Each structure stands twice: as C-alpha cells, then as structure tokens.
Image 1: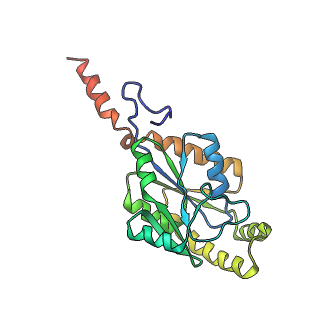
Image 2: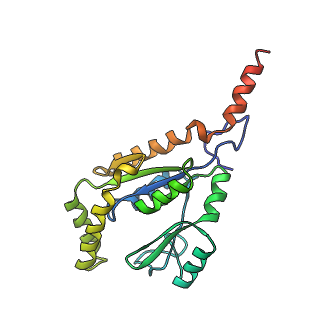
Image 3: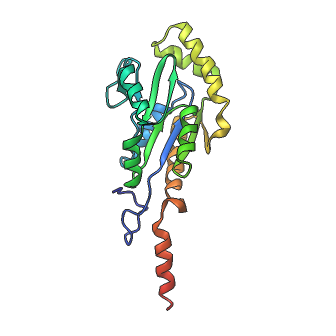
Length: 220
C-alpha cells in the first residue's frame, strides 16, 4: 500500500492512485522534471514504456524503456496488453497495461512521460485516474538550441523534431495543467504542487464516505 500522508489512519490504504502524465515537445524538459519529481516523491512509480527503437547513449533497459523487438511489440498489441501505443519516427512506443492497473489499485501514483496522443488515449481509457500536465518551452529557438547541444541527432532529424514540436504544442489546451519551463526550479515546484493537490481530490479518497457516515453516527 502507498505510504503517502493522505491516507486516513482509520481507513488505511483508502486512496486510489493516479496516472500523472507529463508531456512536452522533445527537449522541453519533461524527462528531467519527471526524474526530479520522483526524487522528491519516492513513493511514485514510473511507467516504463516499451519501444522498438535502439537505446540512446546512457539509456538502460528496464529503467528508461523496455527495448523489445517489433515482433514482441506487435504480439502484445494483439493481446490487448497496452493502455496506449503509437508509432513515432518508424518506431513503436507503448504503455503496458498490467503493472499500471496493479499500482493504481494499491494506491500508488504512476508517472508517465508520453506525448499528446498517448495522454489523450490514457484520459479516454481512464478519465477518473489521469491527470495531464503539459510543459512548454520558453521559446522554440531555445528548444532547437537544446536539441542541437545534445549532439545525438543529425540536422534532418532535428528539423523533423522541430516540426513535431509545433504539432505537439498545438494540443496544449487538451491538458489539465500547463507549465512554462523557463525556470527549472519553479517548474518543478509547480508540478509538485499539482501532484499533492490531486492526491487530495475527493474522488481519489473513497474512505471519506465512510468517515462522514461515522461523523453523523456520533450524534445518534
């Protein structure tokens, strides 16, 4: 069960977990923000997506992604084993269903680092569980500079990523919250506040109904 402070001692284990979704165009900081958010909240789990692309420098199988073959990925599609999946730049990405459902039922929050398409599908599949946060860069010029400084992609791929960034940003108004990552520390603080506020949402704490019933019994 979750150890977060929002469980009632009279109704332990009473909070349902949430899908905490972070999206942004590539290079706008969502991956670093999600890792720092987990440092501040060690009870959060991260949804490790499956992908058919090769690992990038520094990426670790099982930590950043589960790197699988196209055959294995498509087999899991056929078994309805993903909450959502998409093909991006000729590679599949998908969210495995079973570990997420188990975590939510145990009252654990699960963080997602996915694009707008995945966020939309998660919200459609679990509208009461998904909380969506979109992260905007302070400018597109700065975003392009960040991608170039990574030194991981040739110019044509960077150009495609910038085209995709504009397409991603056009969906900003589908999200529950929007953060401009101009100052990293402030953006992290704002996201942390959103997480804690959403943990207090009435619909995530089903023990409240029993608690209120007990309050009324005190008058009888």
